[in-house]
Image (cartoon, rainbow, N blue to C red; front, side, top):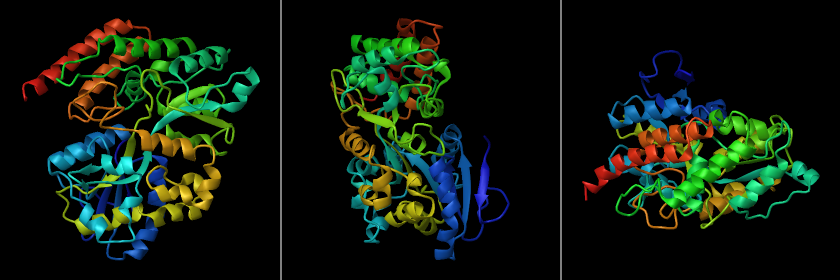
Length: 434
């Protein structure tokens, strides 16, 4: 999709905020659309600040926001980024330190943020973006389908146990499992990287030697590709988060391993035929346990913004406890942005809708460790990504190889041999910096 400028500031170029208007770049996900629908409340409470929203698809958002912030373009006063960008951009001086703003308002309570998220968005002890919602990953499954087939899973399954269940439930038009296969470092590599971690693999050793042809990585990728090809959804090489969510919610697959944020789709009777009948299990293990990823969409202020105070007022509003309660009261508890604040899970309305998934979500998020994603030492941080600038390109290239293997166009060995070449080129640049 193209750029879509919305909000209360009237028509005009999104690069020309004018006056006291604050220009905000958001990813066009449902929770962000909810924020826009409630933004009139912010403007009534802050009559001196007008809002202009620029909503973009995820891929566009990354490209446009990165280009603007890295060059000091100044188009945006608030940007939606993640724990992939925050520390790197803070280190580069591209983001405003938000801790002084947070500390000036005792009601804001930054200590209420889930600790792993707070740490993931901090650099040298200060927060440089504020989490809007957070997620880890877990296994979701159709409880009725399992019961009817006489199949069960432990709360902490291993990947072979998941594959065996998928084999038993793979019947006719219903696939045993849905796993992402769509190219993209934020698509197929998100779940696959946690499988690599589980099998004891890693992208690089501590000296930046590429490890994508190691026995552990080969075993993990072969397992993933074989499982989705044998028991997975049709057209898996083009399936992403949305496609798998649709399949599970409509009773067309028995299981799905993906983001904890999927509960907003699966547990809503408006979008799901299995709402209230979804089971949740911990991210599957192998050599390593606690393999759930850690991700957050967060809000930061580019250093180039000329409206930093107004930008902070908006971030404060959209990431505050009071906003979460407002969403629950005005739009319903199923619309609450999950996984950012501990207090969210104490809201009576949210407790009621989240009984099945609140505990596994919080447990997964608290256990996720960006600093130690694998069994062996690594020179990078990140669970389902590598927090290095080169990963956007490296991950995309590798993901294309994996997706081709899922499509049956190349073998896993060939995919990893080519991927190893890409990784070696990146690793060599870091070796030369030592």
